[in-house]
Amino acid sequence: MKTYCTVVIALLLFAFSSHEPNKCCFSYFKSRIPERVVKNFELTISTCKIPGVILHTNKKLEICANPTQLWVQKLMNEGQPCNCKQTVWYHVYNAHIQ
Image 1 (cartoon, rainbow, N blue to C red):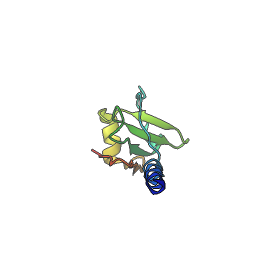
Image 2: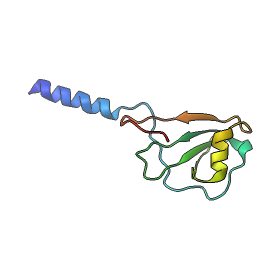
Image 3: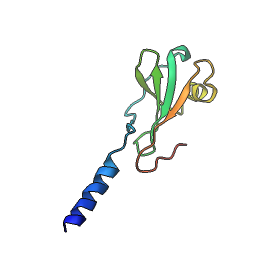
Image 4: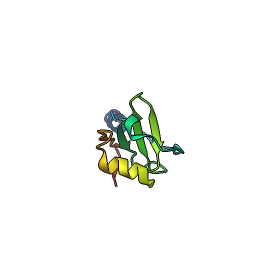
């Protein structure tokens, strides 16, 4: 019984001890963000309720954008004007990036 409890506790700790932050968007920023202020971006994980792109600004702000908006897609596809780097966060439960 003692071994069983130890194994269960170890598995629970492993499952919930992700070193990566789990970030989700709950709403989108309404206005377009100028490309010159965006440092990089990351895609939200597939387990989030809504898909999102988190834009990181030069002033260290995190802004959620709608990935279906054309200006967001252009920013992600080109990435050249802002020298954007894509950061993808993975979740313990096998996130799928689309």
